[in-house]
Image 1 (cartoon, rainbow over the protein chains, first blue to last red):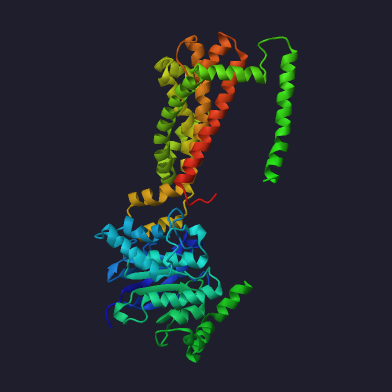
Image 2 (cartoon, each protein chain N blue to C red):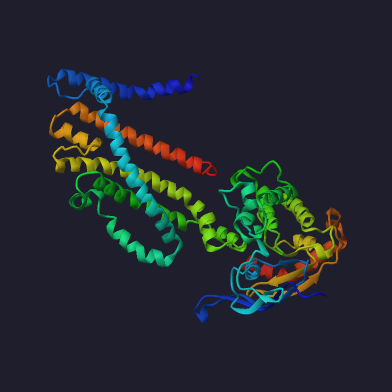
Length: 270
Length: 258
């Protein structure tokens, strides 16, 4: 196996200056993500999933341990790591095209692209996520599912090597969610060979979503946030509706649920 | 076709009744100076035809635009910097807040002594008056930014300056627009007050402007109808300025549906 694309070594994150009153969000988290791997982190709310993602994105430094990309320490955000935020984070003053074009136009992702190459990339990305005809609409004119497509298009237009996705489908209704799970795998390139795929770290609290998407599922528990188990999902790709009916799919969901069930029950009582 | 005009007509009943009552009262009194609607219309026609009123308004507007532009050029970047940076705000805010309670008209004595009774003093007053609402709204605008948008831009590798230009400024634009509208309102109020006061100092000399024209009608020729014409003109110009700024904001911000 080739060297890890992303590497987390004993990463910890504490909040609060006063040692006695500190909250431990994440404790001793160690994990390698292989190039082209689709890794999903699943766990109850408050388990520090988002903190892990922010450490990888370079948005929050860890208070212990270290994070690496391609063996280099992560010290801040970088265009090779694209982030998709839970609340879409679309620029309300930009149209669909303007949002998709944003990183290419104002950031280093567009270096070396002339206007026509940039427009071609924007056009192709909008087609890829199925937003043809909405190019000139503003985010407030779009449904939740369409906004999420715009956020996805903005992310992949920059062609980052790593996609970091923080519960991107959490705010959507159940049907839209299933559709976008399929779309996401198509856009990620599940029909292509593993070498041509991008590395993905995807966060969710939905176990079925985790199993459907992932090569591996990292199960976390809360208080403090720790890695409880790493589970290989050997379901064949391309995955589709038949995957969801597969007994192995059901068994994996059951298994992961059994790992976090006690804690989830406790959280609802507390 | 029917519903709206009928409602509009009903809405006009009280204003028309008041105008008629005013006219009747004015004709009943024997004083020929008493303003009445018909005398005011006649005075308005005279002032427009002679070119005095348009010229005065143009003079005042020129001063307002100059002072307003100067205020906006300083207040918008300063406000954005204050809203985006804690150290800048902590240093500048006490200075601004200690000047803010001093009304624009209260700096007039210094303005006249330093700059005389002409246009420069008037422009300074206008700029001073317009500065505060613009800067305060720009600060609020820069502070109200959704922090996730800043993070999104940072993860796309944008420099600090690029983030300022592409995220902070457009995020703050609606608040800046509110500040500009309020600033324009107080600028226009301030120019009339400043010209009235400068008119007193200059003894009715030719500093021009609508306020100075009002001072002449008040202190020298004593023409009440013409004063009322000036008051109405001041109100109408303010309305047109605000509507024009609103239209400009809608054009600048096509994404805000409101």
